[in-house]
Length: 422
Image (cartoon, rainbow, N blue to C red):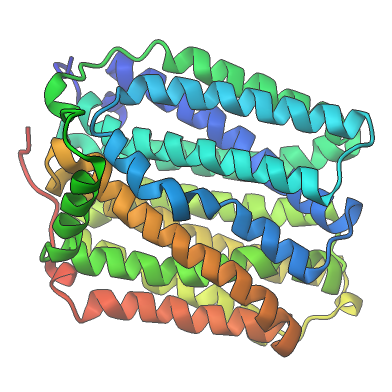
């Protein structure tokens, strides 16, 4: 299975990874298109209030509050590849439902909330399966390059997807757009069925053991580990800040600054270009600086654009051009920081943890991330109401800085990627 798996570009010569990568790329394109479509529909079609916007943002992570740790434990028992296929099929159905509701003029806040919740459950299962599956497909010494490849394709999708989504919204309307979404995820499911991977019984714990014991083992392993503990804490703090940004940015830019939807999509696409550049250099930076310092550099870069956007004297009267330049540059630097840190962050986790605890370790971190995201999304609604949009962005920038500080004062700062792992 792993013979011939190389580094960097050669990683795509490994057929199981090529199918995994292709499906991930399709999902990323569809997700980027769906993100801007949902944001535009929420703000301009449903005319949601700030409170409703924050509720919809929070609903996408509600499944993690109740199921995250359980699903993570199940991924150390179930076949991860099969789970990926089923979640893609579920997305086909979910997006087809949205298309039907739009076509019949039946889409309202509550039906969109229900779809958001379902997609959140599917995302939980997909993420819980994908991350622990990757080390079964490629050698651990090649994980940084594999994750960089995934990040590169995802950021290309992030570049093209929002712009394409905004263009299609204007060209064919949201009904056809969500029909296209369903087709994209059907193709992803087909590719996922082609992934040939060995998942021996050792990767699926005995069902007779209570799942609660597995969950507790996963949490103990994660939060007692010398470097995974500060890594997890830093990620949690980062997610708090990111949840605020994810909630406030669209309503601030589309409503307060009156930026057209095509321009907002272009700004997000510029962020995708920054992410591609960050992912492109991530393996070299990780090899030169070490995993810890590469993660720290990415965390630090993310602080800057939101400080700038919080202080920029922008109003709707500033005009589309100047607003697009500022928001686009902020997205560029934001994407660069994320692209740089993601490949090193995820690869370090996958390389350090044993295979039989991968699902629970990743689920522990992801679940706490989503709990924090849920809190942050609700907090963002309060902050927007009391402080205004720009001050809320400023609060998020300070929290991003705290995430970087956790790395500075912990052993994670000096961590390096394992060499010569099997």
